[in-house]
Amino acid sequence: MSDFVDRFTMTALVLMVGITTAFVICAYIGHLGEVGEMDGTDAIVEEMAADTVGKETTSVLPAFLTDIVGEPLGFTIAGIAAGFIVGYFWIDISASGASERSERSGRSGRNSRE
Image (cartoon, rainbow, N blue to C red; front, top):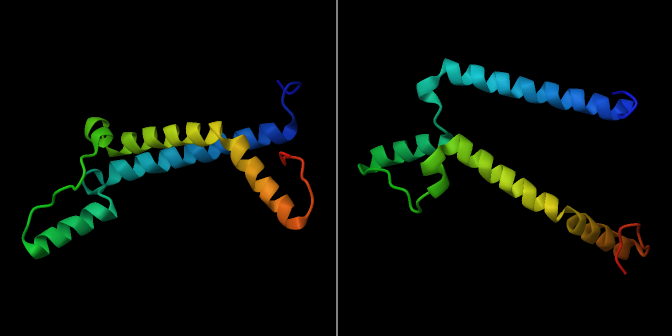
């Protein structure tokens, strides 16, 4: 395998897998420790405000995706979709930023489209 992957790529891959594994383990331990108390700040503030006013909490817009699969999985799916969209347009995004920088400095860069 070392013939196909250089040392930097292997180090980056090992670090990425290690850090991701640490995040997943820590999140799982936190979930086990406080199963009923995993509300976000917005839910806590909404409940406090509703208790103060004496009304029940309501949502302004229905959250279709999070109602079906739950909030953590819904945000994961939304993040994956956003990553695909940004990844698809990344060349255009980075090229336009490089051309704007080169226009300001008076040089044409490698990514500039002329």
